[in-house]
Image (cartoon, rainbow, N blue to C red):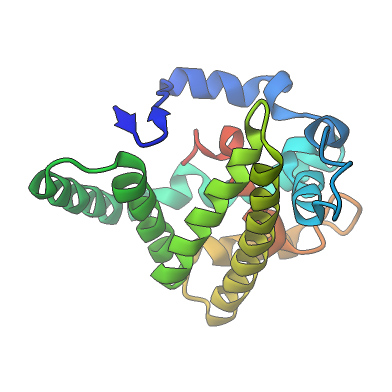
Length: 220
């Protein structure tokens, strides 16, 4: 399959499972993740904050409790009730694509489908989810082997919009009690023992987790 940005890399489930268990890709120091960002002026504050607080750069004792908290709402048992609805979304998008003929897989198929799913699962307005997908895409560009200054500045703006928007939206959903995934996140957070491993804000922690693909793709 081809996208407007080039080829699409496909991993088998076994490949993803192996990546999840690998210490080499599950942990990276904040210094390594932020290498090359420090000399920017003005500073890339949002992107730096994003990496420092992600489980991707978190080491014990913080890593395991944080990962357990954010993984539980994304485990197969929590996601499976959405399977039929998601299958309907996929079929509808495929039928639309067949009628349209040639489409851009990334922007016209994958991204709208992901936005529609999270809108349903987290009870967040679809237009907000569409903006979140765009911001997430901007953040991921910072993972390029040699990102340009413009790419990093765009990623920094995307990180601020993404975390602020998603954290606020999750908090509103929690107040309404209209998402089983968010309800589980809140319940598990309240059951955590107080201490340095407990995140200050569960919605902020969960927001960062949704981009941490090595940890969330396999159970998802």
